[in-house]
Amino acid sequence: MSLHRSIAEARERVSAAQINDAASLENFRLEFLSRKGLLTRLFEEFKSVPSSEKALVGKALNDLKKAAEEKFKAAQASVAAPRATPQASDWTLPGDAYVLGSRHPVSIVERKVVDIFSRIGFRVEEGPEIETDYYNFTALNFEDDHPAREMQDTFFLDAKKEYLLRTHTSPVQVRVMKSQKPPIRMIAPGRVYRNETVTARSHCYFQQVEGLVVDERASFADLRQTLNYFVAAMFGPKVKVRLRPSYFPFTEISAEADISCLLCDGRGCPVCKHTGWVEIMGCGMVDPAVLTHCGLDPERYQGYAFGFGIERMALVLYRIPDIRLYSQNDVRFLSRFQTL
Ligand code: DAH
Image 1 (tube, rainbow, N blue to C red):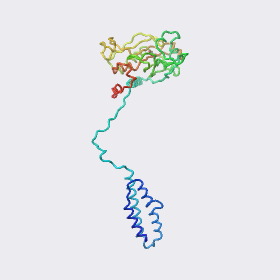
Image 2: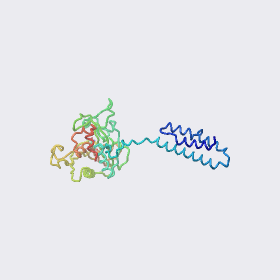
Image 3: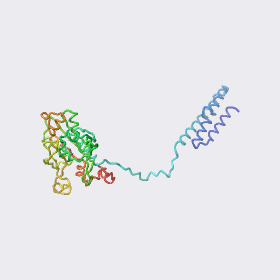
């Protein structure tokens, strides 16, 4: 058979070949295009074609090769792409609803607090949740038999009562004073634990923020201004702040800060127990004994400190009546905070 006829026949076979799946595609490749396929053999034979015929036969052979390659490529694309099933794509149907998560109200308030204090130069510090008696009590001027130790119901972790879950964020004050040189301006948000019965108003864990400023001059007036600034930024400029004398072992003088009730504008309601005021934090001047404990000279340095609970602030801001809601992960509750 002349090469010319073989080429013509091969062309017919190429155009007649049925490729409709991966297997027939591979067969086609093996038959025509592979190293041992028909085209290779024809090109081999082409070498012995007399030169007078070379131009004509060469063109026919090249056309055949192009046709086989094109068919292969087109078939490859359609085998790889699954056919669209027209009835499955009704573009007028509404899309699937996207379920958006939301931040937890405690995180929302904590971020707000961090943001407000960062603006006036407070740095965020952290401390461990498992503390020693020393940092949680002793260094903060709670004496061994001091009744103040009983103020806080502690989860002790060992029989010797050396390790415990911190009952407040105040031990972070000690860690920072021991490791940094004044001027210090810090807040420390974090979780704290108390061995208390869980009720609508108290929980065995909650979130606090500690604040501490130590400098050569830091006065009670500075503390008061800092609180005024914070309360105005957090609750709005109309909310009033008042300080009442109080007692904490690690501050001298000590105070409790109240804000005028947001819910009733100070007129009296169940949230403020009809007093018009809601207590939001403890604060005071760092006791010189605590400065000494931390290696700072109380003749040279003064400090003020404050500490408050996040859940209580969220209660006032978002009117959350039951502290247990924060830890129940009920999406009906959590989704209320989607837009905040
Ligand atoms: N640590 C106190 C508590 O948990 C709160 C507190 C009061 C922190 C006065 C302070 C402070 O820094 O100065 O009840």
